[in-house]
Length: 461
Image 1 (spheres, rainbow, N blue to C red):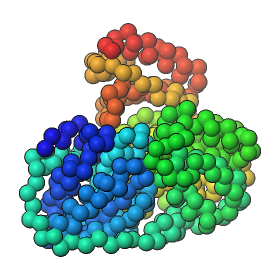
Image 2 (cartoon, rainbow, N blue to C red):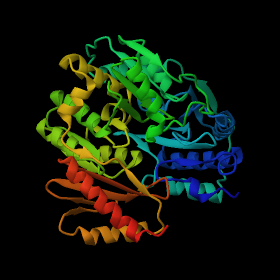
Image 3 (cartoon, rainbow, N blue to C red):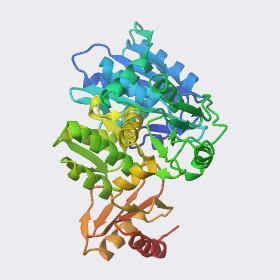
Image 4 (tube, one colour):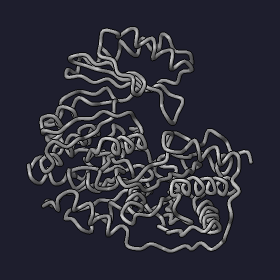
């Protein structure tokens, strides 16, 4: 079977349907996943696996192929229905299933689909990625798996997940007192609509909905809030409605961007700092993690709040892995993934919303004012370069900035007393990614021009 090797990514499996990922490929991959998960549970004859799905047009066919394959292999399949990826993680962790598969291509365009895979462990969920089994699943998928098929599995529908997830989110945030805010949300006809709507059944406030009907064709815009153009309508709506803030989750709901009352995008590093400060009020001395792209603001806020700052490489599977290794209670990523130890070291966005509203209520300040209070650095925003010689450019930058403090845990990061930069290759696209931050906006702009010019001078396109 000619399954394309490139669909096996660092964090998940993802490709264009049906050319790169179809029902036949899904059957082979499901067998490979089951074999791998059985090997991780050598004392069990059969596994209990959760199966969730997004709203893409190709998802029902893939779901049908996968669940029937798992049943033939003897699995006890728990059908979660159409759920966000955080809800999928919550179900696997809360119910202690042996593992699970979420059928989704996250923020990718409509022609894509994919699989996210997890298994349970004594310290929480383990996402299957480059360091945790993806290469084995790839090998098994490409070679073909011949497993005994007892054909005695079952499929059971799981109900009430969102209600339980909301209750858990409220508990994580300390069952906060929240004022009645006006909030605009644009989930781009994707899965974030599910948990946002359920959350606002339990908390006060006026929710103004944009693009809430689930639609796998993404008629309004691509469900990727990292693309600034997808936020323009939301920003305008927040201003027009005189709302207190805006919410923009991505396609599978595991990333969440905030828009302040002025229509400005709130940097995820600020949200990380805000949540870290709140958690450390009750958990002094605990570890908090942030990824290598933007660290000045979270690091300073964490240390000011008597916490311990830990650095990680970029990527949600790598960050969950780092949470296991360190025992940290929370992690924030610059692409707006947020992770809690209390949710199995996986993403959960409802507590993030609650923490932000909790602080706005307690401090009686607008979100832009809270952002200004927390900001400890200015950020360039990610600058991407499509180049053929990314590794050579990283080496050139390393030589050019040898007098700085150098880290190479993920590409190259160089720090100076008043500014720093990181440059790394993308795990999902053929891109070189540059991020710069510093205490002085003018210094950041000057260094941005300097490094961009150096990259462009040596780039092979």
